[in-house]
Length: 198
Length: 222
Image (tube, rainbow over all chains, first blue to last red; front, side):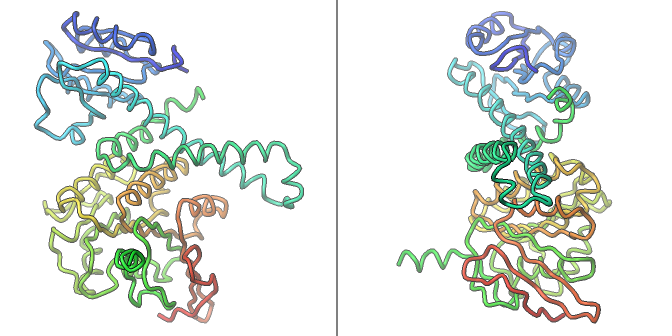
């Protein structure tokens, strides 16, 4: 469970003015947490955080080092790097899910967070789709189609399945974007922790 | 005219199958299933490279046979190991020398790593408009990750290649998994090719999900 309906975003930047600005851009939709260096970011992050906006260059631990620690600890979280220059390296290779170039606009920042949350949802939806397919198969075992027609739980399953199927198929086109494709797989890889709370 | 163009876009299968199939549409994902030693891997490779010189770039993702063994099997088909047209994502964890045609991933449990390796293979081949992806095998993948993760990975990978207009060919040994799981995984794919073998070694094959192909058991001699 997350603190806010819209999700929880952790903003990490040593420039307090930047943190304040991002908070203003995002706080009407998301629960916001703040950290002003890498160590504080690692203290602040927990399973409720959905997205981290991580400044690349900070005194002390750099964004890359903080990212490595977040991945080591297997948080089910999407991380966007915030950088002053266009990354001349492969963000896919580095393990970031996306990046934002400073200075960013309200629109760009909001779109980045929304995109990361939507790919998280895609990963969750595919997993739920699988578990419902298994349930539906179990219900079908040994039952006639007449019995199934009369079965309210089965009807509800079928209806949820078609909703999920429409939703995950509509996301498919976006997977040709390499960083989105890889970030979606990472969300599947890291999903174990989030599983227990539902 | 439009129909002619659509047909020209199709992936030719030549005589890989004992049934007359001109070709399949771009974006198709097909599952090849059969018991051990039934020749399903051979069929996967025949579908990727039906002609001695393959028409399309090929990526083979492997979780069991390491890259050199995959190459040996393609070697027989006359496939040139040109890194512009043939790449292997080797997730077996087998060590090997650095080779631009091979993208190594430490383990099939590293789904992200397999995804990264696939995108790198495609990027370094110049992001071609056409490509055939082979995945061997789902059964091995399931020894490393739970069914839900395996399903999710296969769903995302197959939709990614489908969106790009690529052909995907995956293999599974249904005798090592519960029927229910096999049925659920099969639902990811547009088409399936089942192989079965009698005690006397007679081999048959059945295709489902391809337009204009009857889902009937057909002799498939070795």
